[in-house]
Length: 206
Image (cartoon, rainbow, N blue to C red; front, side, top):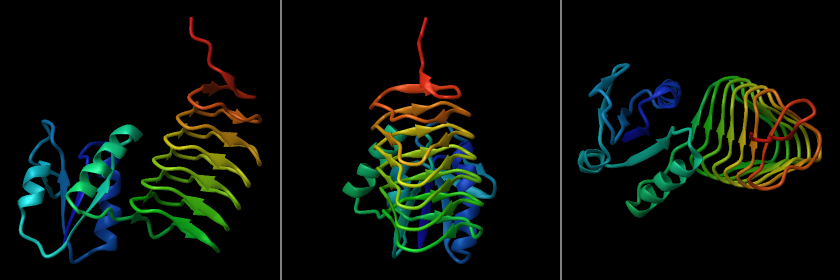
């Protein structure tokens, strides 16, 4: 089997060791279509076209790109090529009852998912973040390190939750919203809005 980590920058370099531990007898490479070096942290860096050409009975990809729209574009590229997305999961992840996660998640060390949770495609949950009971999380959502998502929260597609943010129980966060670093979210957030502060309020640009 051949597994490619799409993205050889910081996010990808954090995901590769998780996949190496999960798949110790599998060939692992970085996929990068930019000007990345040809070798990073013990693994080849190759473009997508070369990944497709490499001889292997089975292939899969983990998309380790922070930008959610780019993740979606690459997920669609993989779908067209009939290359499935693989989940990257640290051994220290805690997952409890009735948690459903769609394909392509990247779950970093010390992530906790409690019970009765539904999570969409290509979810990124960074170090020490958690999702409490009865949450619904859309596609291509990103949690930066230390996000605290309490129970009965709904988060729309492509939302970004910044490092250390706290989301109060029962909140709805709209698609494409951005929650700033350290924000304390006590009210619903409309789609596409950026909020910051404690309590979190819409960002007003000068």
